[in-house]
Amino acid sequence: MKIAIIYFSPSGNTHRAAVELQNELVKKGHGVSLLNIAGNSGFFGGKDISGFLEENVWEHDALVIGSPVYAHHLQYHVQDLINALPAPGGKWGKNAFTFVTYGGISSGVALKEAAALLKKSGRRVIAGMKISSPHRMTRGFMVKEYNSEKFAGGMPAEIGKFAGLISSSLNSKGGKENKRAFNYNGVKTDLFAKFIFKEKEWHAKRYPGVMIDESKCSACGVCVKNCPVMHLAKTGGKITWNNDSECVHCLNCVTNCSKKAVYLTGDLEKGKAFMNKMIEKNGNKEKPETGIYIGVTF
Ligand SMILES: Cc1cc2nc3c(=O)[nH]c(=O)nc-3n(C[C@H](O)[C@H](O)[C@H](O)COP(=O)(O)O)c2cc1C
Image (cartoon, rainbow, N blue to C red; front, side):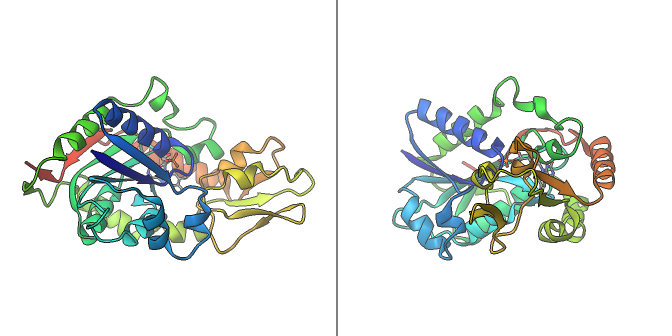
C-alpha cells in the first residue's frame, strides 16, 4: 500500500520523525513518499498551493501530515497546507493521520487543530501523535537547547507503534469515531492558545528580531539556504529580506552563521526569563510526553 507524508520541518525534528515513520512503514512492506515543504519554492514561491500539492504528492491509501508546534498551535503554514488539500477521491486518500513535534513545553492545541482541519477537508482522521523533541527556538538564545537530549538515543519507539496503526488501518473500513480524541490538553490550554499564544502576532511583535551585521557578513548564503520560508535572499552580493514571506523564528539563520553576522535583537533577557518560567512550570509535564491518540477505532 502507499502512504504520502507531507510535512513542514523548519529545523529538522519533524523531518527526523517523518523519516523514522517512513522507515517503519517500509519495514512493513509499504511504499512511502516524503514531501517537506521547508524551503520549497513551489510552496513558498507560488500562490497556488493546491496546484503544487496536486503535482507533488503521489497517489496514496493514507495521508500523513506532520508539523512543529509553534506557540501552542499547528504551525500556520501547515494550516494553509491542509486548507489547500484537494478533497479525497482520485489519487487522494480518505484516511488521514497527523503528528506534531514539540519542544516539551506544550503541544497545545496543535493536534486538535490538525485533526479538525483534516476533517473539514473531508478526511477521516484515524490517529494523531505528539512527539516530545528538542526545543529548537531555545538554541538561539538560551545557554543550552532545552530538551536537546530527547533524540540523542534515537527516535522514540512510539513512532513504530504509530506506523503499526497506519498499516493496520489500511484495509479497515467503518469504525467508531472518538470525537474528543485530540482534546487531551483541556479547556485551559484552549483558552491560552486562543487568547494569549497568537502565533502570527508573536512573530510580528513578540519573538526576538533577526538582524544582519553587514560588517561581519560575507554573503556566503548559508542563512538563505537554511531559511525554511524563503524569507532571506541574496541580491546583488548582499543578504536581503523577502517580505512576501515572514520570518517564523526557527533561528536556523542565527545558529548556522559561522561569522555570527546574523544576530537577535530585542529584550533577550526578558525572552530568556519568560522561557525559563515556561520550562519551570510546564517543561516535560505533559503526560505522556510522547503519545498516540486514536480518532477512529475499528
Ligand atoms: C517559533 C517557535 C515556537 C515554538 N513554540 C513551542 C510551543 O509552544 N511549545 C513547545 O513545546 N515547543 C515550541 N517550540 C519548539 C518546537 O515545537 C520544536 O522544537 C519542534 O520540534 C521543531 O520542529 P522542526 O525541527 O521540525 O522545525 C517552538 C519553536 C519555535 C521555533
